[in-house]
Length: 346
Ligand code: APR
Image (cartoon, rainbow, N blue to C red; front, side, top):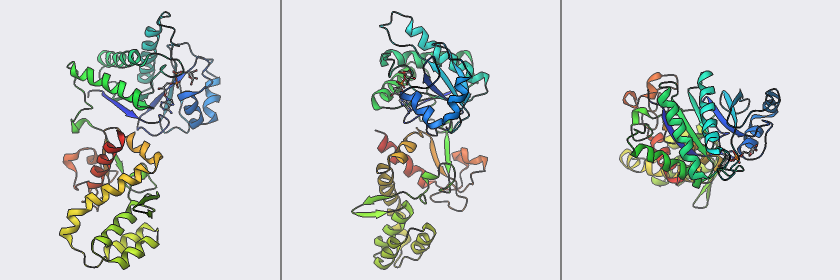
């Protein structure tokens, strides 16, 4: 299986569905600012305790620890070079950071890894040089070590850095390297969700998150969708009742009882209504927006066995959920979420 190269914009301390994340550390390994500080804050104090036992790390080398409160198995720490005008072997040292991290990842059975943009922050390494070294080193590693890694992802914190890496990756694709991150749906990762209190629950319509539309405050996408259903059929009594409660199960029942309901009309307008609601849910809640954008170009799938319209008609335990050709439902919610992600990622 080819290694998938992915670029996403976001915070590397969030859940990116990888086995390991890389920390752009310093040689003490005792934390600092930038991404190093963010990772130590998110992981908790046990990380520092383990790092203290490592006796530092040379520039261009890498050491591995547990991830503690960060949602992955390992953190691989690598001190990048401080830019000194290119007079101190910085380019070779940066390449060595990526190579050392990938070697350590493979030694520890890591199949998916996420990198920040090493050395291009406080260490001032020029971004245009760094992206070539980063992707070039990783491509060479994959060529020399086939089938060892499924995903190499960069999680980039700002638009400028994201665009630089994405353009470099596209350049690789133009030079004949097939990008598995392209439109080859079969090779794309499928991210599953269902109940709001389970993994990726924030994607569920039942996830509680306030947002405003036309001066009305909604507490969940479910409430917005059922309210709009009642308004569509001019059942204002049900619309008011739906707005007066927040319990999603009750709201769903009120939605089922909307008067003057017409299937043809609802089938025509429902996806537009859900798209508009999702756009505001994710636009107005930055933490949800960042998590959604961090899913990159993954396929999003609501794993609801009984729902063959908004869900895929398969459970989160069914291995067929990863193969769109085997879905039993239309998965409309996932596709609406992907359209919202495209809209908000720019
Ligand atoms: N998620 C992803 N990327 C991040 C995050 C984050 N939460 N926070 C910062 N970044 C980005 C920065 O915007 C930059 O693009 O990581 C990249 C690397 O920047 P730095 O964190 O400053 O790392 P670096 O340039 O390698 O300098 C390392 O800074 O934090 C200290 O202890 C660290 O001394 C070391 C030095």
